[in-house]
Length: 265
Image (cartoon, rainbow, N blue to C red):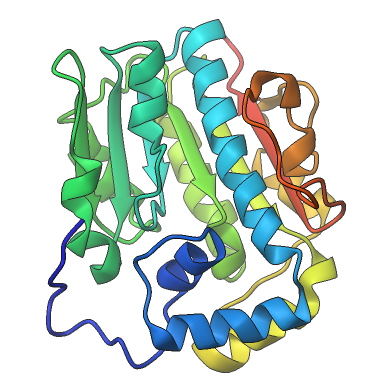
């Protein structure tokens, strides 16, 4: 982590990556983020356990793909601030030779990018400073680390609800065409039950796009969802999680997640 963020990073206004860090109980946020996050938690106290459940879903899904499906390449869109365990820590904990590329164009994340680049010597990690919608550039630069002729697991966690339609569907359509058969797509997304939260984000940061389960499922297109399908984050293969849950973490109907495979291999 960097102790001296760049001078152009505003600390007097809330920032989505830092607010999320606040929900997770991290330390890379400022008073404005705590103030806004506290207001949002008054609207929906369950947002904090939802954030924790989302991070545990990340760890379980990455471990499963590495262990049971032999995936050794990962592309993470909209990375956000580093939060241990990071994706590369999970993947390389299963298979040290795993190669991971993180993508974000947020100066907050860029300021902390060094924490994302600590790879096992057998593998590799890289960071691309890019808008997630610029798939051509992302694939071109990621190809320095990843082999797109082989399966790649793409993750977009808690990302698409910050992007308006039709951006997610368009960027995913372009990306799917570039992925080899046997590749995977992992998505997590909040649900319309969080309308009051979305309104707060829209009013303060101009962010927030809600989609229902059918709309989220449609983002996977012709990829085949793994069991148990699109479910609440705490319901996605909970038997893979050795950590003991905190009271109140098993919340219903606020978010959905799933992992899907590109057929043909």
